[in-house]
Length: 74
Image (cartoon, rainbow, N blue to C red; front, side, top):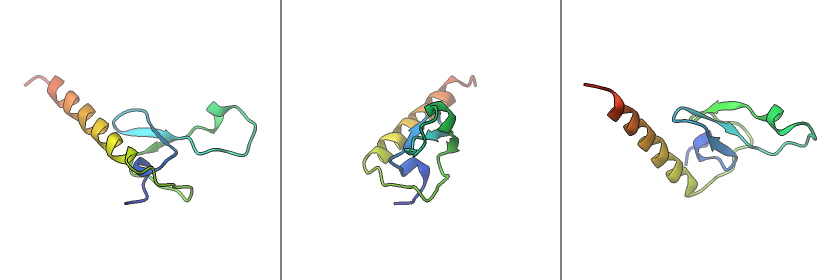
């Protein structure tokens, strides 16, 4: 499996193009301050395999893209 954010345990999808990293920090600061937006194909050294969740995320992204294509008038 590729070590990309989409297949990482700490990744949370926001929309069909991006999400954010929920990797635990050692700071006591506000949780929202530590959140950083990343794209599905980004990666970092904190990557942890999320297993089956990758395929669930991929299916959700494909469904969102299909819904978007269905809404475009032709």
